[in-house]
Image (cartoon, rainbow, N blue to C red; front, side):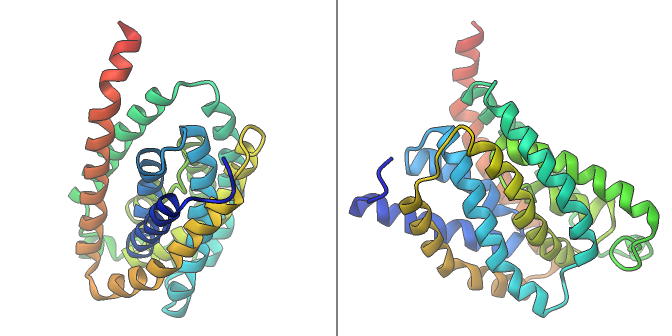
Length: 271
């Protein structure tokens, strides 16, 4: 792909970057979910091209969005530092595995995974309820048992991130809130730091097979700058329950679109 973009493609890239970063700043995960569909269906990239660019864009957007969450104390650095190395290794391995599977199967599998995670998040959106307030050890004191949990989850998230070409926030946020007992705001802030580091492993893996076009990536990042601050600001206005439900509804919508488009293609391959 040429590094110099036409007016139409540049406009679509700016808009796509803004939408991705707005969702990422609001939910800590939505940007990851939107990146691949926007790059494949709006900017007309192949899945493998979109995967490499998505990881780079989401990683940069996550790093920029992180500032607002640091200011409010909603980033658990110790957890992120344990999570990220295993996540980066998993991301590299997932990128290798993606080369062995057809794009249609990957996108259909992605839609099914998103649907499961969205339903789970919707049903458990009241993560600040009384019964969970006594389970925040991993968010606060971080005892030794948390190292095993966090490291294991990091490896799994990295594999999914590298394979599907997303930052992994759609798994990280529910894992932190539902498994480790993090408050939703802390889950989102910590997720952004993890995404920034974990993406490096996936990018390294995909660069073995795909070149990232600098012009397109720069335009997407420029567009993302417009949505980052707005997403984090709006997120502060919403309750934890509403934020979780926004994330779940967004996930379901994208999953349905991907499912309707790719299920017939996969069935045709199998027939």
